[in-house]
Length: 378
Image (tube, rainbow, N blue to C red):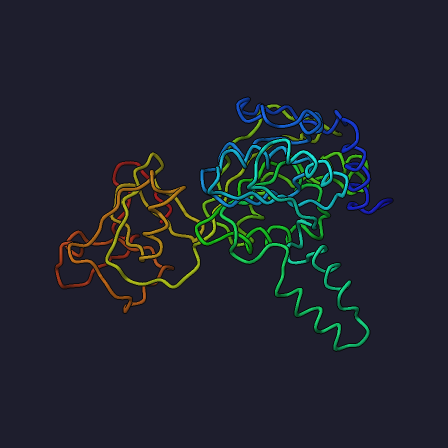
């Protein structure tokens, strides 16, 4: 590549912090009620492709990756309210200066802007500089002390935010760092939290000669992931329940026949943990003959599908809860004593939840053979 992606992005967005770069804009409609307090200099330098802030909730701690001039942070600060908190992270000094100068004008006091690289949220440049000013590194022991201090003071701690948002920034991260970026998102989100990401994706793989074009890369084009690869990056990092909240019908740009469009995706964290028997079952409502979740459970429509306590709890939350009916046993299983094999596809006999003492599961392939034209995956 004639120019390193990160250098190209820094140069492009340093200019964009000073004057409007209209070619970076993708048309987005925001709630006008939240724009009233945002200074014009921020609104005039908005380079997003979606509105992840539309999916935030009161009281959340929100991390905005690649916060730029601060627009999404300023909207999020109003949405989460005084009990919530917003953290913006950006690597560009000019953009950080723009956002920090605008913050007092908004009247919001629940927002902070930090310098950092979004694919490495452990590294803390400000804390590193502060520590070195007081403790210069002269020996190997000094270097070890520095590393221990920085390990104890990451830019963003593990399991510390409810929701990670980003608006047209993930595509700007170099390809070799993208998997680390998704892992970092997963690391900082609390169990039960989520990511809501708006980004540019493409319908075909971007060829090498386009990826080597600094203008296209820094312009949110040639660093885009193919749509299916973008979704897979979330599950590869450990997220579950990935769903598309918004997909633009029309492409934002078309380059050499490749369509680039805006996509907003939500993904959840928290499916890790042991599987215990709770004698619980779920009934999939339809309309499909069967569905498969991120753990490989194949759930036919209309049958009492046996699940462990963990999966039962997951299905009772977003994004699954409207897809199922939930069947609890007559006598709740209070203690985690019997492991549940979540690799099986099994049907819970109705009498199991009513307290009958006998074999409680049956092979799903036996119980859900199609009788009405359905063809369940099991």
